[in-house]
Length: 419
Image 1 (cartoon, rainbow, N blue to C red):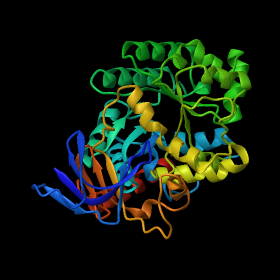
Image 2 (cartoon, helix red, strand yellow):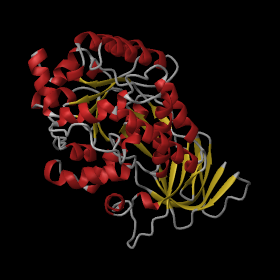
Image 3 (cartoon, one colour):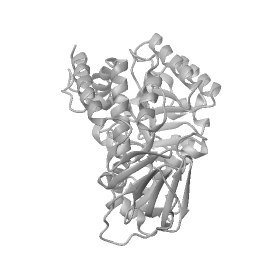
Image 4 (tube, rainbow, N blue to C red):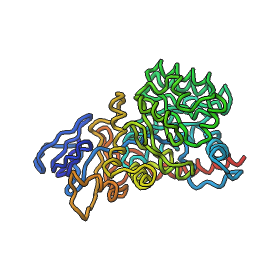
């Protein structure tokens, strides 16, 4: 049991604010009048003057890219989005080893914890180290204390044999874990592979997690090779029929594609920082449903930053109020709940040491999230009833040891990429 004494609790859905003692047990939280709970707790945190609310979810991540930070320029300077994939990310993922995957997962999970996220929806790729890769990644997240919804990025870009390995890894993993059927993007997938992926999705009552129209190239390739649009092609295989399906990016869509998505139960994951980095365009929610959540696309693990980017960049392309930005940040909880995934119960809480110069009310709370609260205010984090971040330090693993090893792994990865 963990006691959060004299806390200012914010209900993340209603934005109701109350002063109380909070008793956290596995799977549950209890509220008591402030400074009244006297029974023994295994851990007591003084939360006087601190905000306590539900933790965050990363709606789309790429842990496999964690060792890329600071690496040198690629062999050829990219001239377009396809080149960025070919000379950077498809070069990197081919060089990953099981040990590199392990440390990519560990550093990502630690980063998520320090940014207040207790659940990660990840999209993994390692074409020459596929077998067992999802199990490796799952164990790293669990070691830190982060719940997860994983998938392997199936693609035909490295040939049919590797595509089949991706399908097999997915099928094997979904037998024993909650997860999704990962697909890279339409332009790297054959009809045969899409059909097999759809069969696996149906077999495990799952959904797909796929990049959609991130760049115009995806649409141009689809029209040239399949005489249809990307969303129409995916819809023809039944991928839009599942409320578990996640369509990532969705920048370059026609009105009819937007209507198809709006009429379906599937979800869209917005990744503003990555779109800016790759210079591929700007997200607009025009014509889509309310099923839009936020991700990081591997750029970082900070969902507060993702929300701020969506809000500020969106002023010219997808205008929203602070309340709408906050709702988009929190939509991932609705995705998890409506699909019955485990790991986002009430016993997931973030404690914020936020010294606001202005009053905090239910009416202006969203404004505090957009303009004030950031990662530096995160002091403690409780994940599935367990304190995994205390005084801004991860308690479940030795971060210093992990970082030393990950730096060695990064140098080895960069060397492999130069070969």
